[in-house]
Image 1 (tube, helix red, strand yellow):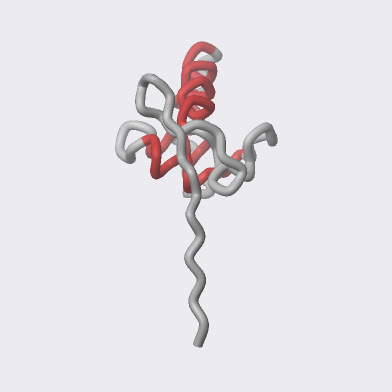
Image 2 (tube, rainbow, N blue to C red):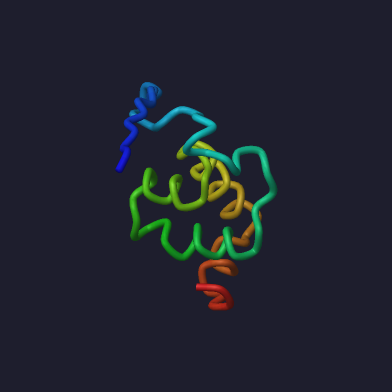
Length: 86
């Protein structure tokens, strides 16, 4: 049996948020699906940002910006209560 160890460098910004890394953030720059938005809004106040970033394949900063935008547009509660995918 063979095993392989790979080291990955992780950088964080001044706020301690993980910076973009293509290994951990494959969906960066892609459109959000309805399921992604529902998950993000439903669990934003429950789960931690880093875990959600891994789950959605996006940076923590991108998630934070998306939540802020959805709140400004009045869509945050819509997705939070959608109950279609999650």
